[in-house]
Image (cartoon, rainbow, N blue to C red; front, side):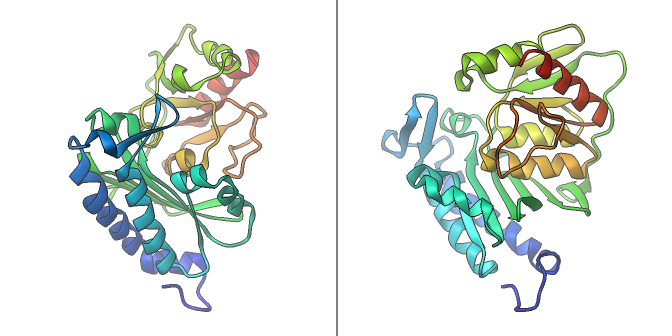
Length: 281
């Protein structure tokens, strides 16, 4: 619990491990027991057949909402499923209170199909700035954390993205075609060019982690939902990478971005991808 005169930074120094424990407990209680054991009645569609939600999503988000709110009184929570139920919840990002942004199961489609490529994402945001993030790939037992100005870590080891190896094609994970409009497809099609090797993305959170680890050169995404991007963007930044929208500005979790945007393991790669996206927009 935050003390009356404590800053967010002091809270994180004291309680970051408590946040990690809350994420692990939510996954252990609500997500992992359902992994590869989902019954048909535990899976529903939201906007369509590719937009799924499960009991694991709903129950893990409810648990995290309660536990994180208790850790930081006065904070508010924006969860993917809560926003689906009431879009007005998203407006809390515009306020002054600290905001927990939660994606209980990022990569729900993978989760439903028994693929271990899913994760739980939590970010702490204040006045539009992502201050800290937690990324937990429960089925892979991998936990990544980042605090602004203090670096990014995976299982206690510091992450350094570094520049791509010279002379090889840049691998770029892009918005999956199922989730893009015709206009967005045209913009992303510009990445199909010499020197690049684009592919559809999986879990956004795990793609960001791959960039931060230097295993993936960049991502190029066409949607703004803060729960998909906030945690991973801070990981990439703290590992030495960067992110750019079509106007050359960093991506804002509060919205209003010129899309598509990119996040990359170094500034040169981000500029190259952003320039290609801009030419097609």
